[in-house]
Image 1: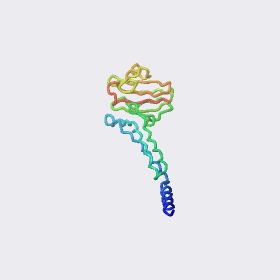
Image 2 (image 1 turned 120 degrees about the vertical axis):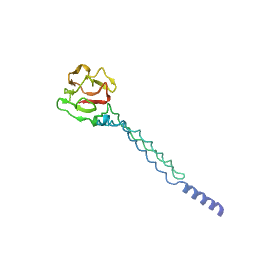
Image 3 (image 1 turned 180 degrees about the vertical axis):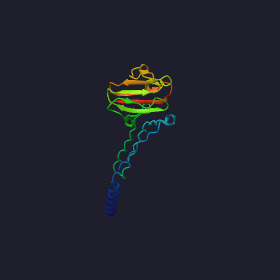
Image 4 (image 1 turned 60 degrees about the horizontal axis):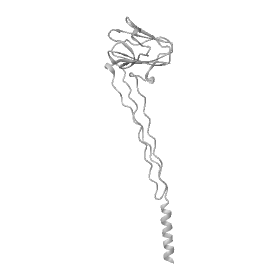
Length: 185
């Protein structure tokens, strides 16, 4: 009978020690960072921001204690960022709301991102024979853009922006060296 009690105590001890604490979940991964999508254009333009990196993988759950419950779930990955248009983002644009605007000289290099008010006129000054101005995302002209070749006469081009929106523009000859976006709010 002593051996039966000893065996029962040994079995109970093993059972109690098998019910250990459960493990805790592992930490989630971290989001990646965006890479720059290009250097300054023509040595003096703005640097185009890259897209945000992919989110990191979530960590795996930790293993539970001996005989305990499974570990917790892994964390979520981080979020990626937004893409630039013609080297511009709304966050990087210069706020020029409140009236009509004359942009920097339309020559190489030109990289300007501005915010204007609805109803404002924007004027470009330069040589449109050598630097034809077009609306659209470099290098594709947008036939629905209010920025068109018909706006260009002499040494200036003026466009009135009557609707809220994002209006990218570029030089059809020099593309990435002469571009920007007008954000109308």
